[in-house]
Length: 376
Image 1 (cartoon, rainbow, N blue to C red):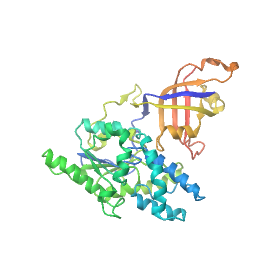
Image 2 (cartoon, helix red, strand yellow):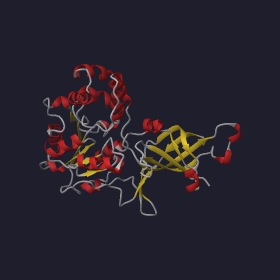
Image 3 (cartoon, one colour):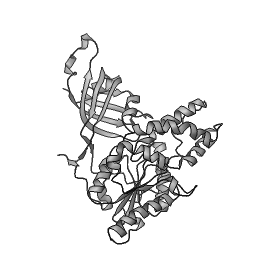
Image 4 (cartoon, one colour):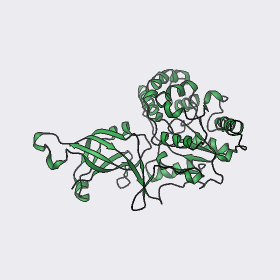
């Protein structure tokens, strides 16, 4: 069998009890009046491109990419590359490495998709007149390239600051980027709107790296951590919890963010299901066309419905590194060979419930996609 067309439309369900992982200090003490976003790995899925390019360059030096080494994340390019060269003991300078990586990255950046839920959140805040800005370790040149395919909604942000706007060595985890982004927001709130002083504790930051979380913490701002490289095992999750200890809360991806925790207006598109759980529409839908690598066997016999695993490489190309959860959607399974033609009617469109993530039962360290086909 081949999974010929896998469209995950329209809902991601989550129960009221588990929809938010309160890993940090809990609900903010002040209602939020403005928001600052990180960009890479938070609004744009550029981390996948960075991993791809880094892996390619390391192979040229006879090195293997270490997915657990996350210290460079969130730092300015020069600082990140310096750490990378030291960690992998590469025989090159920062300038030499960046001369190789820059053209490769700039080729990939325009292809990077938005992180799931990013556009929804930005447009929601804009619709409710909540001013937003960005604070990124990227350069001005890099941001101008990355934002091109997302300009329709990224332009809703008032503006922002990059590593070019702070002194060398004062990027994340230092607070300077966030304080300068706060100046952009204060200009809007205090001078243009004539409202009262905007305090640091009234500005909510969204960050995917612990360097960024620590920078927001030093700036005196509450922070939602959305790790772009989530840990897969219980041991690593304990490390992750320690790394993100300065976050106000930690969530798996932006779709699971509940704005009411911070005094912000609720999303209007959340559907409450008959059993009390809720579901979130996904637009545009995720589409995955990939072969099954195992399945329609033991799991199907246990569940009494057809179930399988989809090729992990296809999953990695279709969804961001941090996306996980349970999805509703539709599936077509193509049978191969005349003897299987239309066998059991599976060539037709079927409803499906699909899980994306790391199966705790088997202790998987790679992300799997398991469609469970609602077929009698």
